[in-house]
Length: 380
Image 1: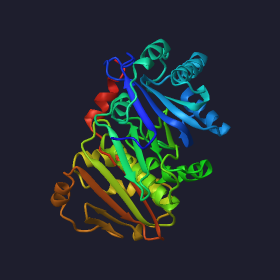
Image 2: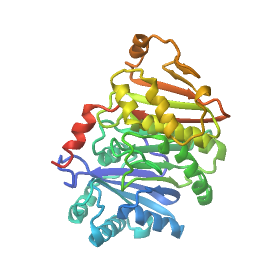
Image 3: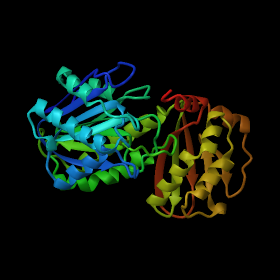
Image 4: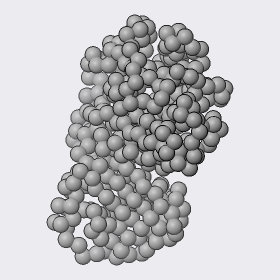
């Protein structure tokens, strides 16, 4: 996928991943960028997240992102913070920019020292180009498919986004690692005010296993090369890209066979609708039923009830793939037909709480033996 004007990216095999696949990436703008950032709420956050927050507070522009995959550089003590800083310094020296203009990211196994010497040798081997695909490949870990999306504005400016993530996903901020770049000229304050709102409607509504990574972060860069853009159109494009990426995260959940979309309407507020939808998408019991094509709507009701959203059980309506299951009372539905309808690549669950105008959507996947197998053998 072609990057917006002024951006280049590349990757190299630094030998961090045991597989020998690309594991070191650079994403660079020819000019400094305004930017917005969110990082994990996990209190065991990695040095890359903590450094990103510190850079954000300085309000200085960014110009590059350096990422390694295969090593999370988390829970590695003071050496981990030094290694993260050194990774930024090495990238900055190669690009002839200040280390404070470089954002770092790491993903992979927690608790292992970051091999900075491999990063030092790998960085000079990165050839920067106009396509983001090599960078996308370098950040993948257990991902089975790349996750990229784009949108165009009427001015000709573009928004291009990529993300990685397949397990340890219920972001509680953003996603595993997500990077969006645009050549639209957007003011720094505007970026930062709007970014969290997009997160709440997209990445924060994704769950694979309810686990929030220590390394989650999402960043949006604007270099302004294409000039100003209408703010309404811009944020619509950013949200479109993030929702598409969020759906791809859920579909590529570890061991998953199908994408689950949960739409909640009639809630007391949009926030309560999103909360209820995410609760259904995250329920291990319902995810298991989804895998087995079992239209056990009681598990959906349970998940709605435990979400904390306001509800009255006799007002709730639940449907599955358009088939009504419950409407204030148990409906007489054809279980075999409902089960057959669940044998699809995407399954839609709809719940109307009958209380207000709030709406929200969440995305998840089924829970399979494959998820257990992947995570039972992750480091052995």
